[in-house]
Length: 405
Image (tube, rainbow, N blue to C red; front, side, top):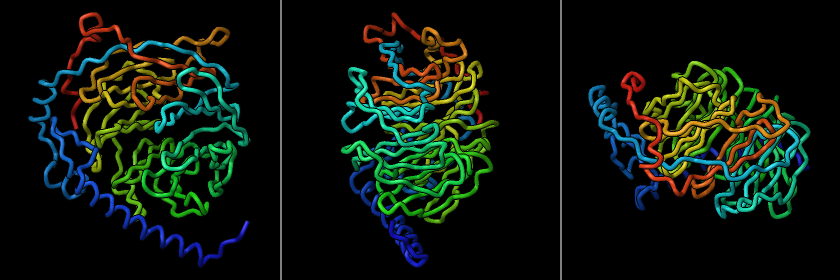
């Protein structure tokens, strides 16, 4: 491999800093000119120009306590059909750690496991297409690019790999993490990836040169999840230190630190069409308005066990999967939990082996895929025969105390 001098590294780092600024401005200009697909929740109002941080500050502000209480009391949860199990897939030899769907074609999905492998499955039939090997330890997370024929994987073996999905082989390795890597995501508009893990820093990489672009220190413990966005904050990360950091990658530091959670923040999930996100910490789920990180909703989750995974679909369904196998479905905007059930472990497995570790909705939001500790992958769908009369859901009891800022 050709060595790269210190001068070259400085040049590349400077080039990417300028690229960050240019792309951010280009993206803002485009969204203002054409109308952003991202919507901002503020008492039911949408504003396509709210991609500008200043615009948020001028028009949104902080909602008063009185108006917030009134909105919560008057809010009626949207009805959602209940979910049911439709398929169980076996094939992994260890816990299923990550599941990600190719949402461009919505025809296949990939999973990773403690068995050191990555498996690609047909979404419609559930049949195995190919098994990818190369990591030496547990593969903790996956990310599929919607702009390149690439998939990225991270592992406890400290490595980050780029897989060519046309050749089904690893074509690049990214070295630099000092310990196990837990999470990876691909920037939507820039040719960079973000990775993080046990060494408590977020690292940004140039996809093609494999060079590190930036290191974002600040977390006080291992990082559980990192996510990239096309507008500020372009990087969001969660950690064992009970915090969520919203990063300004031009300045190279956190623009906001959310410290509302009391324990490890295990997962964060972003709404596909609204500029907001949900986060989970043990039995605590909250939703946040971006880019300022203002609290939107506290979810009624005190009866839940340790929550490992969250997913949100286009129909405002928030899914939470727990260590005890509990599946909880919420109306994303109101916080109403309308369905709760427990997954069933595979025959021959212990009752303690029914935990849900990861989840993802498909491109349509009509199918939910979960990866579990009994080594299985399960696919869930909504009951198409259900009606509000036949399945009214759990009783809605709005609580003002739960919604305090």
